[in-house]
Amino acid sequence: MRTILYSLVIALFLPGFTSIAAAESGDDGMDHDKLHVAHGWARASLGQNPNSAAYVTIHNKAETGDRLLGVSCADAARCAVHNHVTVSDVTRMKAVESLDIAPGAHIEFKPGGYHIMMFDLAAPLVAGGETRITFSFETAGDMTATVPVLSMREAAERSRHSEHKKKHN
Ligand SMILES: [Cu+2]
Image 1 (cartoon, rainbow, N blue to C red):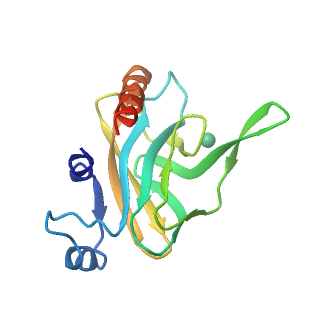
Image 2: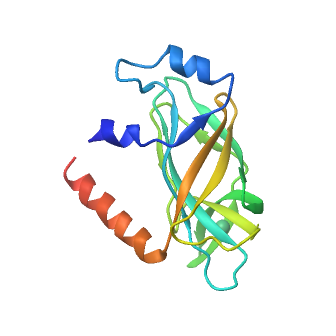
């Protein structure tokens, strides 16, 4: 199952990184010793709200750590990594300057946790569409993921499905 999931990885590697990834890829054609940005999705716009959020999982299969330094979004004027922090029962969003990705780390962005905040969308994100997010890593460089836009209902179904899958692993 894991192999199938990795084959769905939608990260695109920019020139310069491509040759390294290809040279070190395994027999099945996937590079198991690198950073992956996978399972991404963006939340469809709600009403007239010009902002939305997107979520991905960053998996570092390398033996060295890396650091996410920033994100940029094709369809938003500005975007940033946020986290939710609860202090004295009050939960607030907080901008994350940089995010350390330890060797072997599996960092899941999700509602209520890490998310990519998209500000001032050029046009509303519509379920069924897709959007591109570029992640800038200190060592791995830039990786662009094209992620589907999901309605809240689709997103809830998807997360139920992944919880179910976890139980069977
Ligand atoms: Cu936010």
